[in-house]
Image 1 (cartoon, rainbow, N blue to C red):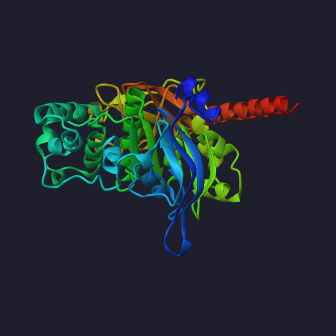
Image 2: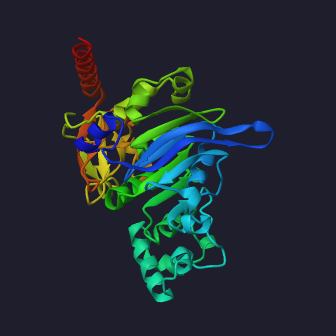
Length: 390
């Protein structure tokens, strides 16, 4: 995260004006049951705003009221200063991208034709729409050859990428995302989160993202809206503020007891010392005479990317890359202190592997030194809070 982004998050906003505004919005169903109760909030232009909370708290209902898939019982919603109640619902929906949990792709249409759906409805010619669709495959990280396939021939992660491409096809200023990554496995989910952040850096859309996962909310959100049961907005702030100072017992309980660890995601790890590490090429493991001098040696491929660990005590048993002891997570220079500490704690060697932007090993980080930096940051925050209070 850049210093500018960190500062904006700490301030509880993105420094831009509201793109979407809820004004005393409520949604009641039969019997007077409240799905959303008196919601007032401004969603910043060009930012990711995450709506998070337990099942039945009104977050999805709030999202769907933005494009009038659900009509509010009372109150008003403004988009770019205009009351959406005065707009035709079909036109409003076509002016926004929408990504849902199951991707919602049409099974009988190819990937390219799925992506062209909204541009074609908006009157764009078929050749022009297909050209745009082909460009978007690259934007969302999919090979062009996949354009000719059908949704059933894709993995879950690929289908979600196509869903994002379809939502972007008409170049909408607003992108609505209703738990889009919850149906995929954790590894793919992390990749899709990283991809969304990359896209946002390039496209700067106004994104409203619904999830029930507080970790996903704090990773993605410039601001996070925590909804409580009964459709009440419990807290709306930058993710760091929600982790640092939950406003009530409900938010504290929802965020969880390990919120202090999550807060490390917002502390830059630029100062983490990186130490040299002994490495060995994977193809040399088959030679039992290849020396292993350290208690833990890092095996790398020919490009210098980490493959796993070789413990000196088991050197005789390891003959190939398939026999290696799996490593932990990786730390990239400048990542957060949370990433640095996780890399060190998850590694079997106790040494977190540090890599450059191309994934090549540049050294290792040590948990004890990361913890020292965390303690220094804690003391600095305490002094700053004391000075502010005085």
